[in-house]
Image 1 (spheres, one colour):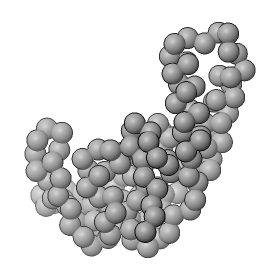
Image 2 (cartoon, one colour; image 1 turned 120 degrees about the horizontal axis):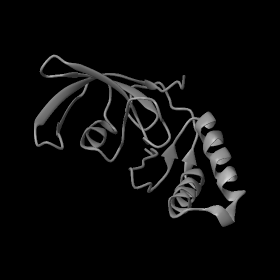
Image 3 (cartoon, one colour; image 1 turned 90 degrees about the vertical axis):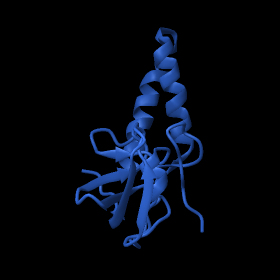
Image 4 (tube, helix red, strand yellow; image 1 turned 180 degrees about the vertical axis):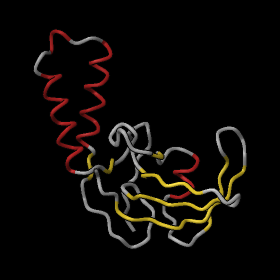
Amino acid sequence: MTRSTTSDAGHGTVWMASEALRALERERDQLEATPREHTQAQLVRLLHLRKLIQNADTAERADDGLVEAGMTVGLHFDDGTTDTFVLGERDILRGERVVSLGSPLGSAVDGHRVGETIAFTTPAGAERTARIVAAVPHQPE
């Protein structure tokens, strides 16, 4: 089975909606239009944008219950709480609740299916268990 994966470090393919790819390309084009005026932060951003665009995966995700980048995921935790988020790259899905594949929760759910139970350790050291109750292709607003 081949799946697209990434981490916050930007290695591998990066799932994104085609609209997000176009927005990144516009931002890159604007930065490249004024090369002599770049600050160090702008140069770093430009390099990051180029890598994201080069590794972009805009393929539509199958609605098959598999959790992978580009899916909206619903969880029901063992303490009765729930959470819904998009599994993907924070830099691309601005303004949405995003969990990255490189995070403890993101790596715990990646590759699992609806109905399965996952366990992970939070950055604060707490052990958590949750059941995956939804995994559907993300629809950008």
